[in-house]
Length: 96
Image (cartoon, rainbow, N blue to C red):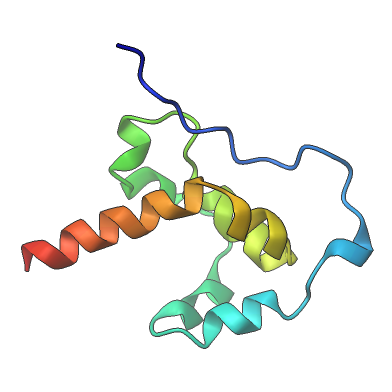
């Protein structure tokens, strides 16, 4: 049986300024506890403490956050990687 791997989260083509959404981070910050994204300075704590990164080499929360801060809305929302985060949160919430 083959395991399905997550595609690497990366920009596959040159960035086009017209495709950036400078308000994307503001949309994110409207969500509960998401206002903390504005304090991200790429220290790597999110990636280092994420349980998924232990099992999936292509998963990197720091890249997701950086892409969101840059306004790469289409990349962030279309990536399968983002949904891994929501699955982990759902499991954690179910444990409490």
